[in-house]
Each structure stands twice: as structure tokens, then as C-alpha cells.
Image 1: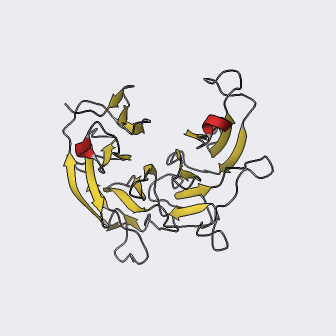
Image 2: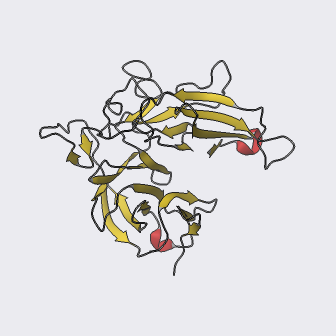
Image 3: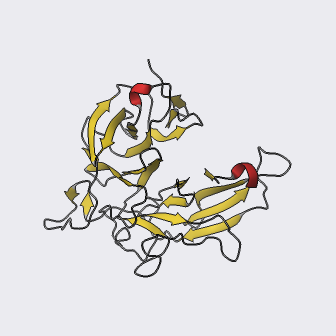
Length: 290
């Protein structure tokens, strides 16, 4: 779910879900005029439906408004293993992509517009696409002070990755299924030309994990020692790690030594930019000093 930047005045929020047919739906809703804690059940406006045939995994699932005021959506590659249809590298489909939509004047007749600067706005692919070559982005985050976009992309069987690029850089190809992390995937002679390689990666081993869960760059005030560091976790291992990124290079990967928090599903960020971890145990943990 993502709140419109002018939510306080227009009451619009957007949801991303899987419908009963197994397809991805992005929808706009509006808060009830009589109760600010309830949505108006008659307000639903379908923005976009993305076919997701054959397989029942890799749905992506994050909506977020970027610093440019446009709505971004991270979609999975359509599922199975290895992206058998080649969706992530196919710019004529919306799976395995980061999408960028203008929803500031949505109507039934025109639920969204294509923002200027989208790489395929004129020709060569679907105009909704902002970036491609993703397997199952979980999750991405904008760091506004540094004007950087972080994407945590779940790997296949060996490597998890975090990609970092400038927020305004359009048309990046993050490599899947040519690459898994910084490694050729199922190929002895893949070419890396034109691909964005990850800022960091980690392997599937006893200390690594199995499925990255991306967080946020810390911009709160309670933990100044974390300022500017990107925090992330792993679904299987449940650790909390961070790294710093500057001048195109990641450094200082740090394990913060937490344990017994369960499978980490996602992260949250509050109005003061303090961070939270969402656990499969049903608990929400706030990141504090101990």
C-alpha cells in the first residue's frame, strides 16, 4: 500500500495485490468522507492489471511514490525457477521490472499516464517500464538525501543481491536471468555488457541465508551512528546487516548481531525515519540501540 503524496487533501492510496485469477492488480482507493480510518468501498479504480500466468510465485509486491512524485511498482519475473519464459529480459512484458507511472490525474478512461523520461516511452518496449532484469525485488527503497535507489533482488539458488543506482537513471538492466548476483547464471559464456552489477551480494551458505529482505537507508535521529547506512535482512537467517555506499562503492558491511526474531518479511519506516522489522512470528520490531 502507498499513500499519495497529497493524501492529506485528496485521500488517495494505492494497493498492489494478487487477484483470484493469479494476476497482479494495482488499484487506487480513497478514504471514506465520514471516517478517516475506513476506505470508501465504492472508490476502487483499477490502475493496471498485469497477467501472471502459469506459475504462482514471484509476484514482487511493493508500491512506492518516488521523490519525483510518480508511482513505482516492483514486479516479479512470473515465477518458477530460472525465469523460463525470459520475462525479466523481455521489455515487452511488465514482469521482472520496476514500473513508473503517473497517477496524479487518474480516471476510468485514463488510469495512468507515462511520465516523461521513461526509457521506452517512445518505442522499443512497454512505456511503463523504468528498469528491468529483476527476479523478485523484495524490496526497493529511495534514499532521497543521496538521490539513490536501492533494490534488494532475491536470487535463484546461490546469490542474493542489492543494486544501487541514482534515482533519475532510467533503463537500467539489473541482469537477471543472464546473471545471478555478479555471477553468470546457468551459462559459461554470458556477456555482462550493459548490465548493472550489484553493489553487494551474499551467498547461500550457513552464514548467508536464502532470500534477501531489503530495508531502508537510515535517516532517523535516534541512532546517529547508522546515518546513511542501508539496512537489510534475510528471510531465512533473520539477521540485520548494513552497508555504506558512496562514490559508486559499497563498504563496511556490518552484522548487528540480532537473533531470535524469526523470518523477516519486510521493513517499515515511520514519519521520523526510524526503522522497523516485520517478522513472520507476527511481531513488529523497532530498531533501537541496546
